[in-house]
Amino acid sequence: MSAPRGPGATRDGDAVGAAWLQDVLLQLRKVKALADGALAQTSDAHFFAELDGETNSIALTLKHLCGNMRSRWTDFLTTDGEKPDRQRDREFVREAGDTRAVLAARWEECWRLVLSVIGALEAADLSRTVTIRGEPHSVLQAIQRQVSHYSYHVGQIVLLARHHAGPGWRSLSIPRGESATYEVARDGSTFDPRKGSAP
Image (cartoon, rainbow, N blue to C red; front, side, top):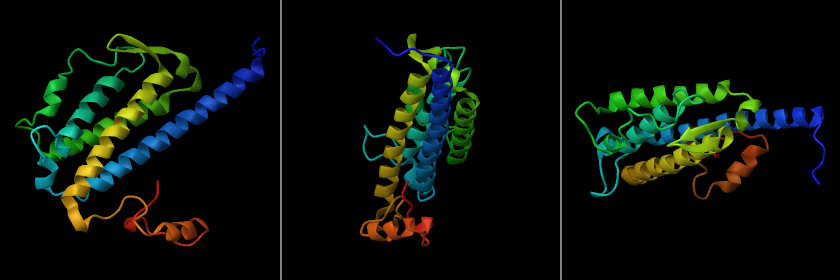
């Protein structure tokens, strides 16, 4: 038999839900920061470079993420996450207007959308139902689905940027051989994030 749920249990659930939403925002900002740190080390040539015919460039990975974000988070609570006007296949094709400046501006715009929509949610919203391609998800599930998706593709961006940068790469996490330095830093000494910061 399940334990009775009273007003106290509801308040506790709301507190947990609110804390979870705040952590989602924190983790997504970290994911974006990783991507931005990689992009800052990527030349224009490498931004559009493809390793082979089956591997997306950094540019196309950004373009795909932006297409996904716009579709999923526009009218998030009231419309299906796969918008009728989305043309997903075009996200993987470099088109005439896909300059680095255009894609960078779209990237910032789409991240503002994601963070603003999640930031406006309340704990009570987490159990509401939304659909993605007609498949029902709780709001919590829909958010977690996107966090996983964005982390996956940002990992690709970082790996490609690291590959292209070669020995000039500046670590986005704890550099090799410097774990002890980070341990000291956590105890109060200075740790320079420009030389690598541990998420």
